[in-house]
Image (cartoon, rainbow, N blue to C red; front, side, top):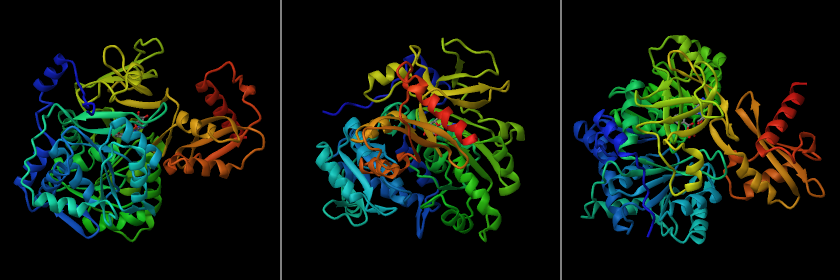
Length: 544
Ligand code: J2J
């Protein structure tokens, strides 16, 4: 028996969110059906030469829902979706939603160690991947996964499936089937998203149809999406931000067209913007810089672009200020988290608010507290820890009582780990964070997770992984190492991390050997203080 994934708000809150019209009893399956009925011939998804109308996406989702159920997967069970930006990403997740089976999203960069962890913690019964992407063969990963995690029985591969079930066969089977999926209940969990993993391994985030669709509806409205909009999925759409803020799912909710770019690089994205007359795109700050560098010299016509969203990591005001002059678009800052709360600057906000702040919450029912170490509210304008609860912020992670005890207050507020200030207008300015993760170009890396892998190397006596400010990435990762015996080469330790089956973005950017941590009184202070001291030491050296 697999453990049911749940997300439960206290009844008084649930009633309030329903009464306010936030939770409307919609499901992913039902909104796609409604859009397909309203405008069947409108193009929903474009990728390469593929163009699917809303009717086609809807029919494919139906077929996949039947096929997945016929394969023996039961409603409530979990299937890992490990796909790049291809149309099948959307047909399969809508198929899963419709069958009441829960997608568990993994990023294309994740490797066996992360996938094994997701499969175990989510008790996944299936795995969907593309044959290859970016030179990596996901069938090899699938083989390894099946030997490591017994619950994973079904593997579906887009492309050449080898010994596994091909995606086409799954869909064809579903088209011929009479199985009738039972529509899921809107208040139940629709999927599992993954946390940035600020301490240790990623946690699983159960989100319901009701709560997530509320964010899609409001995000699409706040971002100005409608039937004429063309939204580009440039970042990996498995990530919560390009998925939902407003992301590809918000765009489909609004009846917009979604254009999938295989990579966020200007080389891949710019010609597609011209060809499809893309109006909206979401980026992380380092990509924005690359786009702003490439835009003036490009032959591609980017004049269709109206809004460029930037989020996932802090955008510096100096950079923000150059967006409109360079790209001729409205900048929208987005500060969100897979656990819930999302803040946006509004499209018609005064320019200075757009440049200087990370926006304000989606909902009037988002409760935001900025508190000190004792949990007392700080005076307005002062920095403090951001706590939040509301109609789309989770009350708990999946099956993880110890993380829940740490991450939520007794009143159900989520401790975001971010340090923020609030402006008199109620806008948030991100100052930093309380937890030790590295935000590398929007990808979150847990220091602890990488330290554990480094410590497993025979020539490592101790390791501390810290974030270092980086002009291009925002932050890069630096591993401070005390060697055991002979010092290994930095490159050897980087290769070691790769060989442990981890995503490439977790490989330390820099390795620094030190004789001891004693200068920073390592024995007396916490890991957190140690990391801070090492960071200060290196930054001081760099400045000198
Ligand atoms: C500073 N830090 C930011 C910003 C996120 C929309 C947008 C982003 C995410 C996301 C998301 C930031 N300035 N503008 O899920 O729906 C950091 C904070 C935050 C953490 C969450 C969405 N935008 N951050 O990035 O779950 O530290 O979600 O707590 O990956 O990213 O990371 P994640």
